[in-house]
Image (cartoon, rainbow, N blue to C red; front, side, top):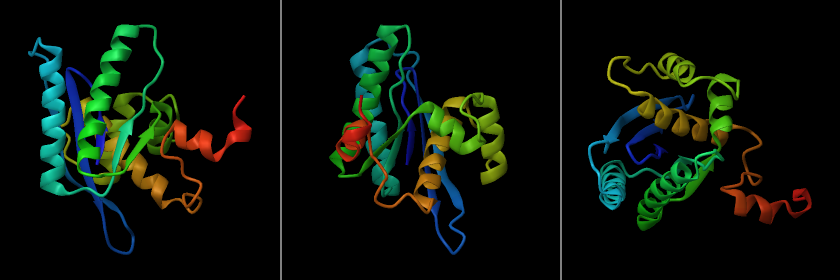
Length: 179
């Protein structure tokens, strides 16, 4: 399951890999639109509820989510962190492992460039996964990209024991690389 967290729009996607070639198939994707809600706590409740609904409907094995990035607007970062935390809490409620990916890692995985635009990502995903073009928003295709990135990371030969789930896990496994 891939989640693109946000307090106005949260994209989500479930992909399945099966068969010999393990080509990912999009099972469901969508956007939770909370733009008209004014209460920030109600938005967090909706994120938690919708994440649980999707998990309970499709029973994903893992959740991949975009990690925090540093920006100039501290308030926006705090809101995004809350949205991310609530989605993670919902997955943890169902004992689903969490994997975080930096925005540049997601872009690099899908397009080969860490500076690709959201539109480029959407275009390539439509080609790779044969998804419809009319219904997706960029939040939705971002969630698909996160799930696809996670699929690719798991498919890599080197993705065995060296895969880090988050920064804390990375630091624990690589104490000599921290300055």
